[in-house]
Image 1: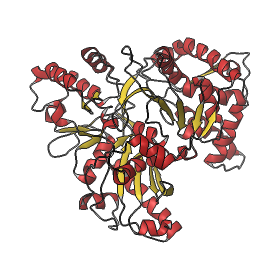
Image 2: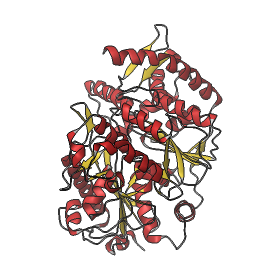
Image 3: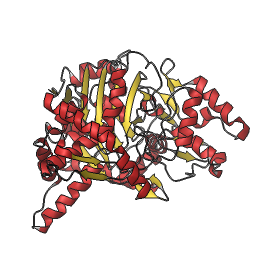
Length: 528
């Protein structure tokens, strides 16, 4: 069937993901292929010491993104979008959105990027004997309790960004299990919040005598494939103010960017993993069995179907690369040159590929914000070089690519020590856009093969569209893993790159200096 006819009949499937710097919509066709897209750039704000996105930013960004999708469809197929077979929403995981009984946001949205919950995370980790990272929703809630914040007594509901958008469009207070696993620990046997830990939390706050119970203010947990409600009349108008979009479209469970990354890279099966590298970077490995011990550097989350996943999450990745690229753009403009993002980043990444394997004595830290893996509550982007270092553009750029992955490598080494087996590792995100370069650096950092799919650039928006497709197209009893393997990827394993021995040794040497230099970064946060 022609794409135009497919879309006119309302058979297209829409996925929208709220990323750190971009809201993206992907519309997929009969064979799960992207047939149209739209996006809108946005940025988090540091307001009163809190990393946040304002509510107006959320809805303006969503509407502009959808409008840009409509324009792409109009230009390509000369039709107006009115309905879809299904829709899915995803967003950055974790964080804290708390509402009262009137659905009023009680405090500004506290995103995953904040590192203000150290005491709560430490206390809960001890209480549960389970690692609770600072960015998790339950850590934010408990820190607010420890801080005696007045709003806590008025809480009626807490959720994530994806859960919030889904709720406003459908009226359903639900969340996909992958996203929910970044709010509160999940029991993979029941695919629900861990009942014992819920009881432990209630006992911990019993003396506060709040008018709510934790389970009652958390979203209902759903697994991939379950129906998560329908687009309401109000929701349709909120998404598409033009009024063309019809109500009644089914929605799949809202998911986090980790789950959509796994889906988009066909890495939801046991012993598969993926690395998502953009504003933040995280690696996820689907486990055969639980880790032997609790590691503060490792998050335990789940796939969209509820299988246990070990996750190394780092708050900082490409922001410093982007900042330096912006400086080079300004330099080019002084000479009357106008460069597209593709031209600029391709040239800089290609230069990095020619750099010395150990970066020639240069060192950088990409810490725009704090970093839990290395125990930093705040960060300072930092570049350091020895006086006799080989200070070339090639080494400079390679240093920043290495720095973007250095903290991730520290966390991944813990999984290696736990003897976690990985058969396939897939990369996706902006870090891999320049063909071969980011992939080779990642392979060197991991000292293992890394594959990149042609569709990796579509990212989480395509991933949530696939989850929406799975909900509407799966056969009875068909698992998400089987659906992806047989109907979406059909044997496509992407382009695999083996690690280069010299690059592996170079990255190892760089990482040793990086670890020693953390004292420099620490001093910078204390003195500047």
